[in-house]
Image: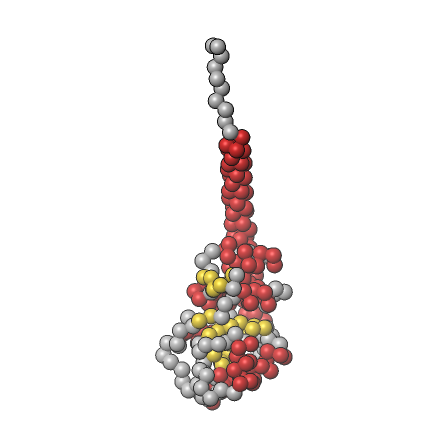
Length: 243
C-alpha cells in the first residue's frame, strides 16, 4: 500500500513535447545556417564589388590611353558601338497610333517619364525608330546606371513592385543566375552580360520625375533643337535632371 502512484502523462502530450523540441532544434539550426550564409555572402559581395571597381577603373584607363595614342598619331579615337540603351518616354497618349501604343507597351513604357534599359540590336533599333517622336534615348554611363538603380530601383518579386532595400531581394529573384547583390545587378546591366534579359526583366520600369528646368520642345527631334530621338551620351545629363 506504501507504493507511490506514478502520474500518467497522456501520450498525446508526450508527442506534442517531442514535436515542439524537434521544431525548436530545426529552427535553431536554420538560424545558425542563415547567419553563417549571411557572413559568407557579405565577404563575397565585398570581394565582387572590389573586383568590379578595378574592372571599371581599368576600362577607363584603357580608354584614356587609346584616346591619347590616337591624338599623338594625329587621328581620332572612335568609341566602340554602345551595347546598352536607356529609353525615356517623353509624351502622353493623345492622338497616338495603335501600333505606336503597342510598341511602347512592349518596351514597358506605359506612362510618361518612365525609363527602361535595352540591349542594342537590330530589332530594338527598328522598334525605337517607329516610336521615336514619343521617346528619347541614349547611351548611359556607369554613374547613371548606378544612380538610377540605387535611387529609383524597384524589383519584380512575385509580380509585386519591391524596393531594392536589401541584397536578399536581388538574391531571391536572381540568385540562380549568380546575381546576389545590387552591385552584381549593376555590373550585369552595364556590361550587358549573359543574363541581361533576366536582370532587366527583374527591374521594374523606372518612374522618373519631370526634368529639372523642363524640356525644350518635345515635338521636335533632338538634332532640331527639340527633345525626341537619339541623344547618344547626352542622355546622362537628362538622367541627372530627372533622377
